[in-house]
Length: 232
Image 1 (spheres, rainbow, N blue to C red):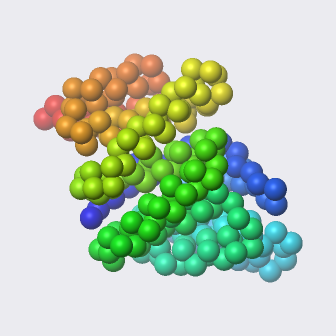
Image 2 (image 1 turned 180 degrees about the horizontal axis):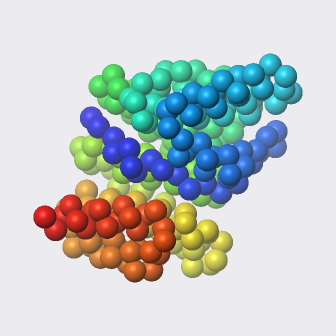
C-alpha cells in the first residue's frame, strides 16, 4: 500500500471550536514545511505546552505536525496518533478526530495492516458525520481517500463518499462561499479520483481546465505534470 504524497497538500479555512481554533495561516504554513522545519515547530510547541491553559490545542497541533512528518517519511504515525488522542481526551473536536483517523490510515499503510487502516477510515467518516458542514474535514477525507490504493476504495465503496464531498465543494464555490484555492484543490483531487476509475479523458479535461482557469495555482503546475506524464 502506498500513498501519493502530492495529494496531501491541504488548503484550509479557519477551523474553530468552543475551546480553541487553528487559524488557516498556521495550517497552511505547516502543511508545506519540510520534516526538519516540522521538527523545529514541534520543539517550539512543546515549549509552549508547558505554559498554556489551552493544552488541547497545543497537543493537537503537535499531533498534526507529526501527521505531516508521517506523510513525508512514512514514520511517526504512532506519535501523531498518541498526541491527537490526548488532545481529544481533553476536548472533542471533529477536525482533530479526522486527523486522528488519517494518522491511523498512515499507520495501517506503514504496518501493512488493513485492520488499522479500516479503523482510520471509520474515524474519518465519524468526524465527517459529526460535522457535516465542515469543508476542511471533507477536504481531508478526499485527500486521504484519493491517496488510497485502488482496491481499498473499491472494497470500502469510498468513491461515492469522496464524489459527494467534491460535489459539495462545487456547490459551495458556486454559492461564493468557498475560497478559490480550496476549490482548485478539490478539482485537482477530482481528477485523481476519476483517474482511479480509468477515466483518463475526463481527468485530462480537468487538468486542462485548471491550467487555463487557474494558471497561478500550485495545482496548475501539478496538472501540467500529469498531462506530461500521460502524454508520454
